[in-house]
Image 1: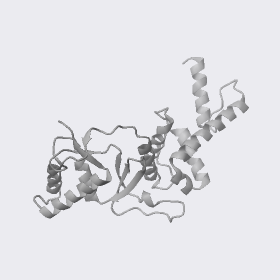
Image 2: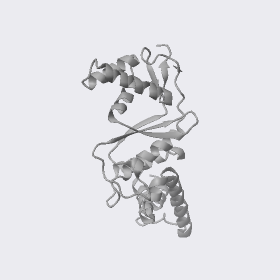
Image 3: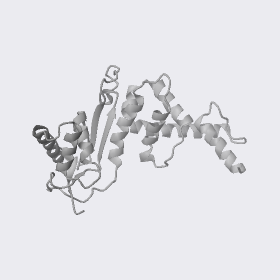
Image 4: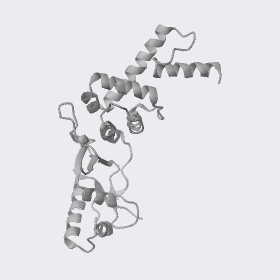
Length: 249
């Protein structure tokens, strides 16, 4: 390692954890402290912007300690600031922190779901919005996120009592509408499975996918269930989760 590289590594170690590392030899201590202050402030502002509920829910000391641990222990893989929130989610999921709320990682994932949808630049695929949803191949919006949680993350906030773990996981669908607004809906497990089948790759038509779902539920040929599934499919289409049907092959 060259002298310059050694100095850079030493300076990075100091910025991440000044309590355990000194500035590089010959570096002015006051200047190093100023760099550290700016570094930590910028990280704190990025995290607060992406995770406002966590920021408001935790006590100030706990929030600061969380930011310090993130700076000290995590190695980010993206230099792109708008996508930085994913790094914080990864940190919380892979580095359980003693003394912190057990729902913290899931709430971070929930908050990042909304932020990631806001910046998602995936173009809409070619589709026929008026296509036959049963005879054609459904096309789901790329601006969807379907997540399962063990904690009621959509009900956690600074003015609410501490949550308890759920007896059954909750399914939350996040979608970005045509106006750019991110909307959430709580789904039952069966509706979540329906959406999974609709978004699955392959040449099966919408009708075939509904029959796959009925077979999976042990209700093959149940016309009442199929009618219910078709009504859900049309509702998902009306709200924009299902865009229409595939064009061509």
